[in-house]
Image (cartoon, rainbow, N blue to C red; front, side):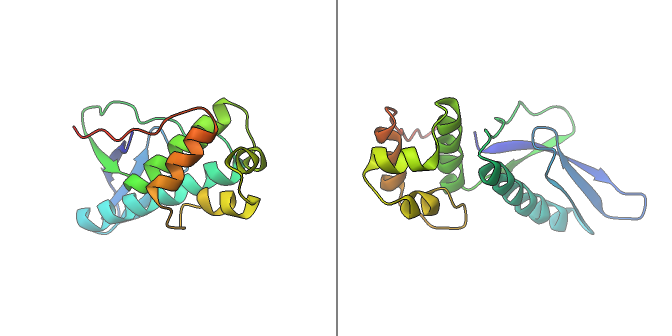
Length: 139
């Protein structure tokens, strides 16, 4: 769930415009392909904040199509996105997660903040509190 398809389109004025089919909020550009790739990773991460702010599920990445490249989210973000999506699926609010975990609401606010470093064990405890298990798979 960490590699989103991105289309790097040459711009008539030079450089590249980057769009994401699954995450329409993420649009960026770069003067060179390398700059566009870095900007794409930043734009994708920034777009995730919109989903967290609105407490709405993040669409999963679809399969790459011809002409697209995959842009990878950091694993810490992937785990938090999975937690957000499960909270949305169960229609749970952050305050309910805090009660289930036995922690203050501020701790869940930090847990759901993409810019806050969270230990993977803490994310695992959050999943356990809502009846799920976080597994790590190496492929």
